Length: 141
Ligand SMILES: [Cu+2]
Image (cartoon, rainbow, N blue to C red; front, top):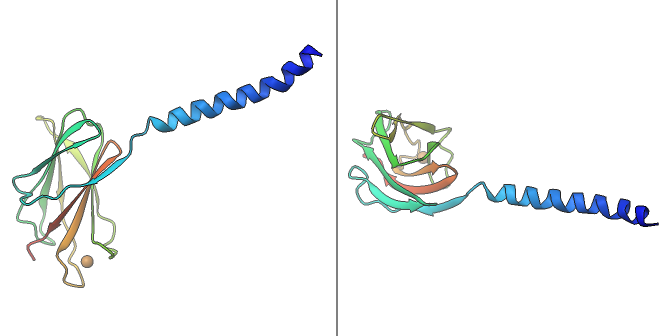
């Protein structure tokens, strides 16, 4: 009788334990999204993103079809990516992976497409180890 009770309870215990492990495991992946208004992206702007001290900037001139550089200072970051979008408009696939240079600054050369509607307002979404800072900016033309 006692053995039978054990075999009833044991599977439930295992399922419960697995659920806890999965739930805790899910928590280990940090996600956060914030908007970072930046008046002067060439000078760069600073924020805190899930414990990272982060500075984000562009080295202009920022014009379509003309390569410019995105730089991100985020000490200790493992993965830094930048995605360029327009609000309410599909501007294609503009995803760049930034590579750390000797100074620990992550950089990528970016070329933006021309907007068929003549719009200049972009959003740069910088993802740092799963956390995202969205930085609105205007291209020069
Ligand atoms: Cu557009």
